[in-house]
Amino acid sequence: MKRSRRPQRSKRKETPAVVYVWSLCLAVGGYLIARIALDGSPHPYHWLGGVVGGAVGFPVGGLWFRLRGDLF
Image (cartoon, rainbow, N blue to C red; front, side, top):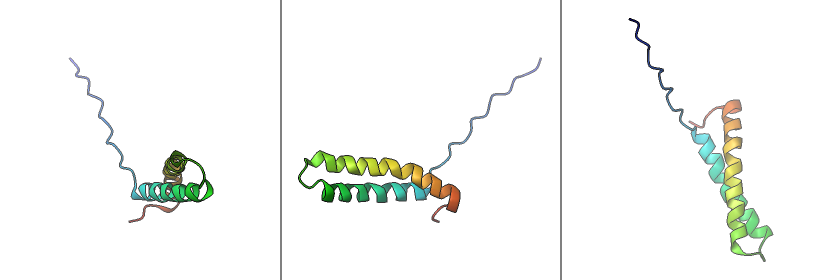
């Protein structure tokens, strides 16, 4: 009788630090740019600028990691 092997679970890959740095920097930058550009608009638009900047930071940081490597 043959035993079937359990499929090994692949280890979860860690997110590189450069992705978090890009995300944080673009979130703060997006907030500040929205704060300056949309000064007369309601406050939630500024937060939306920060969220969009942070969301854009993940793929930008991933691309940076592929091309240049991690920070440390």
